[in-house]
Length: 90
Image 1 (spheres, rainbow, N blue to C red):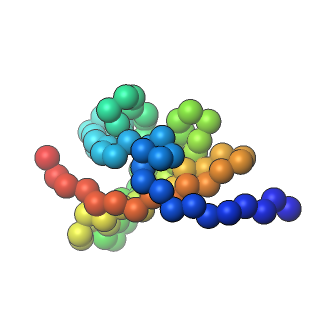
Image 2 (cartoon, rainbow, N blue to C red; image 1 turned 30 degrees about the vertical axis):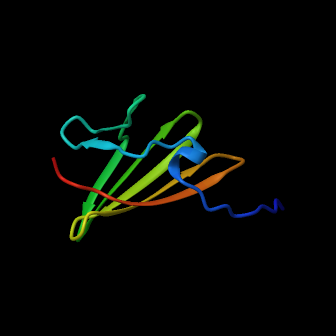
């Protein structure tokens, strides 16, 4: 069993972009350096769940459609990252 520690950090500290753009029509999510396809998307009551992979990580992002808050996870065999943020409409 692996033991680890939790670290609280800013997005830049873990290599994550500060801002993301979600294109629901093209099914892509993009940061300033690259974009990734949204491989799975499901709209439920009050949320949109999205999943994909990038740079050896599997990611899940859930957008609360009532208030724009997001929760995202990025995982691989060694790490797990949980990110909280807010979305704004363009």
